[in-house]
Length: 459
Picture 1 (spheres, rainbow, N blue to C red):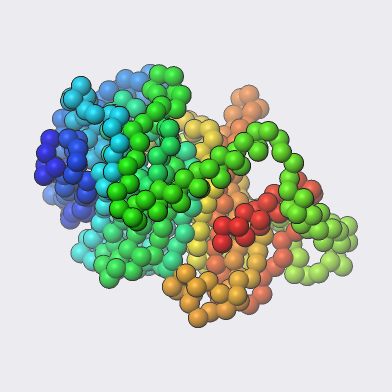
Picture 2: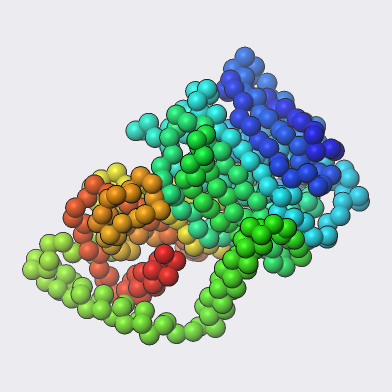
């Protein structure tokens, strides 16, 4: 299919179009402009035949899924995710038909995977309502879903093999440089910036119509064999411009550092002495709060006193195209619990600042019972945050670090396993006094100290 190809899909619940563009032009896959049209006047749902076949084939892989149910799964997500998944489904189906002609091994430039999607908030009330929070601002948890979906499209645009399974390995960092207005059109774009043997780093940015970039995100995806589930070699990346070469080098360094950390964890390397010292000091500061709480400093609070949790059964409507629970859904649920935890801790509606080191260790399946558990790890005062537009000129800004764990629990077996860990940072710019969080034991103290060291290094 040529790069100028265009396809239209009909959604029954809205009235206007969001725009999706694959910017690359050096491939025979579906890389042309694609648009999604919402129409209130129809209750039918039109999907391209190849995409319908793709979803039908995917359903056959799972005996637990109702027949053909996966072909509708994207329609149960927000409009942007629906559009992205529909486009990816059509591209995969197209590539399957011409798989023998595809060049799956030659190096590709980053421009081939570059993808952009727009949010026409200024003239689409349905879309605006979908992303509105109770205070008329952007519901950022929805953006997290979109980021995961867009990253999947970008990864596929690089890999191209419709039979390869691509999965989110980690969210390395998402940082905001400002707040986004839901009254202004927004534009989310990204591309592959680094490729290892089987993994890809994907960098995404979001900006408004005025060109104000307010978010940057880095995801890592891994390609796996559909039968063995083992990592699968993919085509290398061939950066062309000086900017692409600089991005590739920086990403290679990040990948090297991440691999070194993983190897240290596997080898059971002892905690850095400096971090261990901080942990012991934190626990020592907890002494009076643990043993004489009535005489402790009134501003001190234990980690355990900041905890919140919720439990839900993973429903089939939250599936992704691989028939497992959508990673973006898990991120949104974790983010909104972390936000609530910070609000309950600080007494002021927090501003999302950053999330990083999200590890997707164990997939969540339909029917799993998932226990999200959150806690404040530490709070600190930043003299200023110059890279965050909305906080420029302000000083002494409280930041709160929140950890969220997602546990898959099986009451019938009295079993639980950790699926995901998320680390969020929120700002409380209106607060002048924020409580000091202290550990109850050495394990908590080490977790807090490691997180403090990680944040200090990354900043």
